[in-house]
Image (cartoon, rainbow, N blue to C red; front, side, top):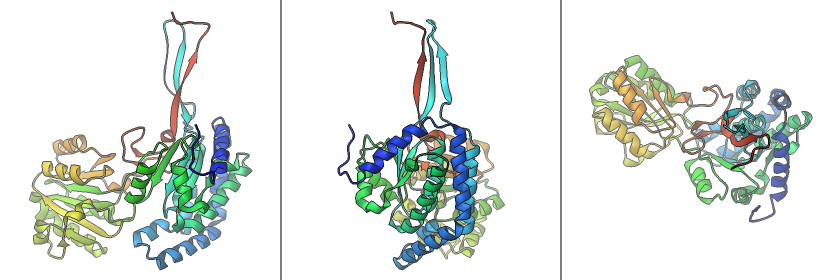
Length: 420
């Protein structure tokens, strides 16, 4: 039964379901044509998008939005062109719809196959991330899904322009304009309705703060794919290469500190602390990182502020980092198990046994050896863009691309067989 608490957004959801039925059987070439149109209109509309984004940035700054949130909110010409590039990359990827996952012929001659099909209508609730508007729309379109967006008030002007551009490009390609819709104008009541729209919306994906994600998970009657917060760890093992440690930690924290794959807690083996920490922390401090250290860290690097219990569970989303010295790999893994949100963890080591133990025993969506945590990203993984980073274990985990926006159905072909 189709259910919503109010009929406010019902016409939008009904239009989305109608569009989804069309998209489910739309040829790949036509979907790619729409994606090329989207990329072209983004490039042609840079001035318009930047102007709308400037309004949102001004309101956000005046309202006390954090530096990290302002960075996520910001779209400049380079970022807009990168979004267009990602859309074109998605057009080059294999269409997952119709892919045969497995199949066989039964002894009686009946042929069965499991094939990928779109979810149908995907709802997305996010905040201060206008890039998500484009990324989600493009991935949904290529995977044959209609999408209903709730982008939050912080990016209201930017998202209004982006959705208009997306709809124009989609319509010009001959596809339903309702393939991409927004309910931003309904405010928070619209978001609540979307969460309760079981029967209209097939899956709901939240992206944003831990509070937003938790609210969606607990309040929604629609199935949710949880994209989690990123309390991300790096462990510098006793054998960690000095330059790798300096460079990887700095990149993981500083390259873009506002995103969910940025480093938030650094753990260092006590036998390597004196060798590594002075240079690692000095380079971070040069980049403006505020360091929160435990007692052993502060003995080596007195400029660090005392770390509190709260620091180990904090996703700073800015230029702050918690740092602790641990006695062993076992203690590092235990710390990660206690405080991690299951997003991304990395070990820097030259010990293959420790590397394999870390990979095997750390239970996060992405686990790395000798690499920056910033690589946990759909674009870096070759997906063109991503729906989000799933930190749950059902259906999808890690960066979500085209296949993760599909389900499957079974196709059975017979020639008159009956079951005995």
